[in-house]
Amino acid sequence: MSTQAKLIAAGAVVAVAALLAFVLLRVDSDPQSADKQVWNYSIWGPPRAFTAGIEKAKEILEEAGAGRFELKIHYAGAIAPAKEHLDAIQIGLIEAARICVGYYPGKMPLAQVLELPFILTDDTLTNVKIIDAVFRHPLVAEELAQRWNTKYLFVGVLTPYEFMGNRRIASLKDMRGVRMRISGANATLLEEFDAVATMVTAPEAYTALERGTIDMIGFPWTDSFGVFRLHEVSQYATIGIGMGGFACMSGVSIDAWNRLPDDLKALLPRIRDEAVKAYIDAYARGDERWIPIFEKRLEIVHFPESERAEMVAKAIPLWAEWAAKLDAKGMAGTEMLEFTKAQAAKFSQESR
Image 1: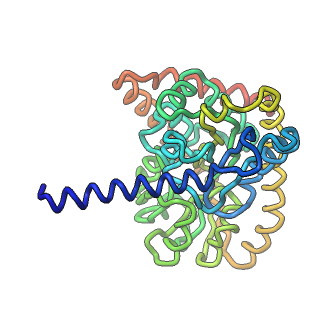
Image 2 (image 1 turned 60 degrees about the vertical axis):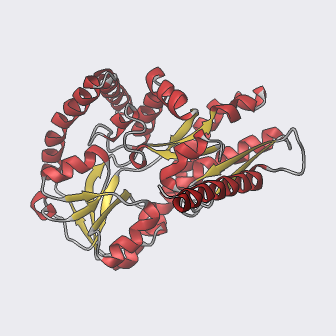
């Protein structure tokens, strides 16, 4: 490398370091009290049903903290991009964030069991219990702690994934050649039916549909489609596939958690319960708002149950393949798969 190139590289490093120091000073400073705990929480997109849980947590913690604690929610990725939340927590740029497994391929290998196609159910509350159990599992907790200095707080509740966009999908054969937004092993499954699976973040979905770089977007039904205005650039919505989509949670820096007063730490079970209720209520309101709009603007296509059953049958061998790959790397793939299947069976039975 030439001397000039070295100087340019060194200057870039200094500039990045200075920017990081500025951002850290900006988001962490609190002129009110040196003892006050402040968590800066990052999430993409605007306030919506998907943010209802952290908004409830903010309400509970700040009320109980009585001036000792503040949770600053930074929407629209204002302080950290969606795909860099784990890194941002690890280096101390932020204290907490929404973390979705599908945005971090390879960074949370054991937690990716939750993204195996159809390993979750078509019932949102059952899925909450399954996801919560997996994130509490000692191996997943260790993965988060050792690799990312992150502690699991509570589930980021999502409803089952359906598809909206500009290709009419009424059967499996209609997926051929369709560019579909989905992640992880769900993508592998769709490719079994000759779809072209790809991944963009939620804020990028509108532009991708508008420009035609993606034909169909997989999102939680219904609120996310409406909030990100995908119905404005779509002709069809296919419902009845009900894929698992993302598995998400709110995570916090272990250092920030350890600094939290004990009485606020003790609120975590209550926060977990009330956050879930806030999510479910918000999604119900979203259905009331968005379904009439979608029915007016779009052709709603109902995917046949028999076709979905064929997808489920095709998915199950992918589970074992996923587990075997992790086992070969010295990770507990089979253990996590069997644990997750057991939780799904248990909670599905309880919900009947």
